[in-house]
Picture 1 (cartoon, rainbow, N blue to C red):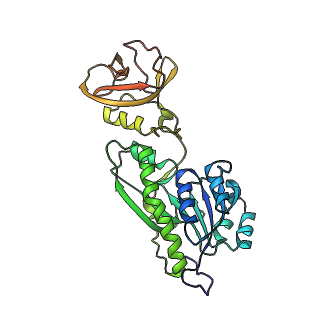
Picture 2 (cartoon, rainbow, N blue to C red):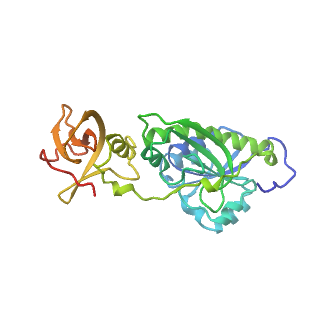
Picture 3 (cartoon, helix red, strand yellow):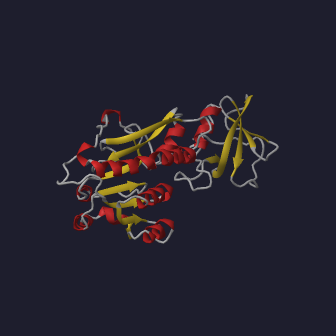
Length: 310
């Protein structure tokens, strides 16, 4: 971490800019506003929504989220004597000049353990891969995405019924306090902040692509197949991967959920069976029947139809 400009008085209030979105950004905004630190501005795509209104209520300027992409924003940060830039669930790539402008640095709250889950939609990838442990990371920002030194991390087990939504919620609950602890630590002793370099040889970066374009592979065991479907499940919110899909006769049918039955089957993988009591459809996986709930329950699919896996 680069040296702070001295002198620095212990517990001096910081001048903070927050680039924040979603529930995590809102919660950090609320908690920073309760401190003695000054929230100079909030950058958000939600300028007319909850975050924008809350920022105005606490006296912070509301700026376009994409401002961080512009090198001229670095001049604004220096002119405003900004100490810290916090990035919380904002997905714009920040210009290198902007990262260098705040006096005490720029920090990102990443919803995943680094370096093994860097990039986008990591909560979904963790479910898909059957991860048994996950976490949230607060790290310094450098031009390379999610590669800066780690300030703090919290890890927690992944439960069998976890979804991307529940993992993301846990990341927020564990991660937001880390941001406030960082701010207070910088106010007390910016030179004393301890960070840990990432082992970048262990880094795995996930881009924005959707596995198999969302199409279910019926040649998988039921456990893997159901986990694939669960990796798309963001509860009431829209999934960045969209919906998982069945493919048959050249058409795609969206799936809401898939669950195991524990009943062995000998039918070819992808064979459509009967309907269960709740309206779900039985489909043969590689080892057992699974129950699939369609987004549109009225979709007509005849028994004996075999879904494509390719």
